[in-house]
Length: 164
Image (cartoon, rainbow, N blue to C red; front, side):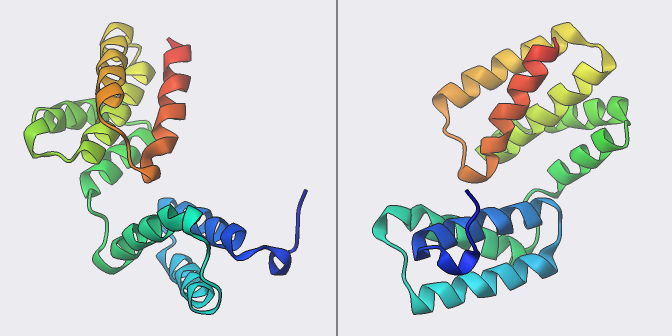
């Protein structure tokens, strides 16, 4: 049931602001995300949400850093854009090269690169390579927890798995 945002309790409002800001950041709408961040800061000053939502504060701080310092993984953005344009061969080439640098990638960078590479391979009809990527993905995510920002990847990888 939809409620007017003025009737939200502070915890609900904090969580809603986080999800809104996250979506805006994914859409690269940093100006609007800054406004949401200011609204979140005001909420925290006026009505500190309960301890059960301390994860929101941590995640909002990560997004704050993204706004202030820029994208920590611009190569992931490049792979995403190549896939969006349908340039799957180039996304596969760059994604494969990037995965060879695994020791230098953060877990988030590795997971995101693996997803974009798998996506490109599915679109190119390279089913065996895509299945191998999914197996590697599953092994990786079973031993390495993903950050909150990358939970969407799990659902997207499941979609790719079903396409195969």
